Length: 260
Ligand SMILES: NC(=O)c1ccc[n+]([C@@H]2O[C@H](COP(=O)([O-])OP(=O)(O)OC[C@H]3O[C@@H](n4cnc5c(N)ncnc54)[C@H](O)[C@@H]3O)[C@@H](O)[C@H]2O)c1
Image (cartoon, rainbow, N blue to C red):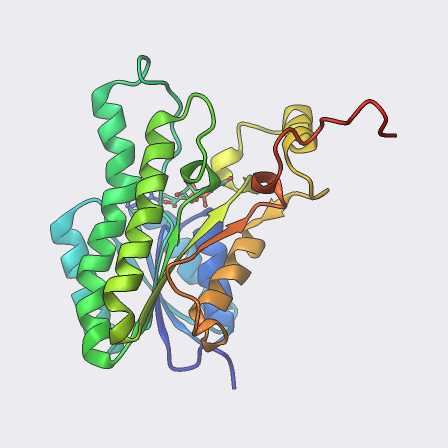
């Protein structure tokens, strides 16, 4: 008996990075997985990898910022698989900029994808979860939503909004047996960070992250599997930080003069 036998899990952003690995891990533990992505080829590749490993998955080409597409997505999943037990929303972008260097259109774009899409996912998945007696929503936000880093005004604001949405959904739907939590990763080794490699990446990790290893998509996926399982049935409305201790420290490399 696997943890997610007979469960239907829908993952937005399943065509790459943490989304792809999460799809693979849920499928490996028995779930039927809806792989949602705007990138059709990426989603198809995830489905291929799952099928190759003996799992069950179907690709859905969806722009998660579009209300009509999100409404249709969940009705399609229920038509295909009969229910929705878990919705994990991961897809996002991570642009740079300050209040003066960010164009308003670009600010709106990141808020649309990293925050409004979370609202849409909740709005259109929850009615099915209520009908079937419960479900789980997991929102991928980020540590910059807790405390911004310089030059990331739109991203940080959007992730902060996603964290707040998580809490609202958790308290509004707890009595419907629906839980909602957010995962805040630190720096994760995914294609999103492909341009930031080698010595510069190592220097960044040495300076800011206490744990002496690179966080991988598997670390985030394992957290999502726990949050989706009954082992976490009393956890809702929470912000789970998976960052190797980065957010816990202020001035990580500061040593008192007497320290060795
Ligand atoms: N990688 C990190 O270090 C890190 C750290 C903290 C938070 N995050 C957040 O994690 C999330 C995913 O990151 P990743 O590193 O796995 O990224 P990734 O770029 O590897 O994957 C993102 C996926 O989202 C899809 N996508 C983009 N726009 C979409 C849309 N409108 N509709 C549907 N799908 C869309 C892309 O096609 C892609 O497959 C993002 O929200 C990112 O901000 C990443």
